[in-house]
Image 1: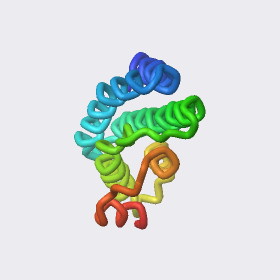
Image 2: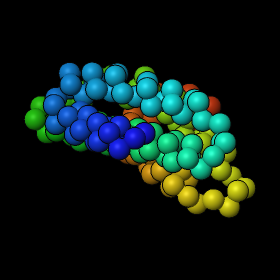
Image 3: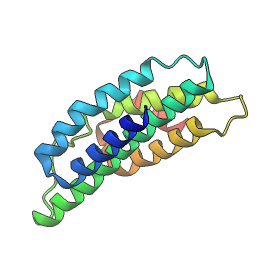
Length: 145
């Protein structure tokens, strides 16, 4: 992502966190597929690619954190009522798979660079922000690895 792309991601993440549930869903639906698609195109060819992938993973983590904030606000303002389905439910499996793939690509390289750190942070965001109760066994295996 360019500096403009990173700024746009930051703005959209803030909008998703504070704009209410309809805005959250629209931002996630517009943004997460693009970032996940970018991760699908990663080919380990250069450190510049690693930087782009790290930026995409950080963007995904920012949207997951925004979701957490928005849902906490919703619960607080609506007497504890939870949102169903969870806004990340249609993305969480793919997010976990893509992040795990990025981490596996770095394994054995002795690299604790930006991609590895971004992926570790995104896993933490996924574990705290998403409803993991609907994950398939394969997705749970990814988390355990």
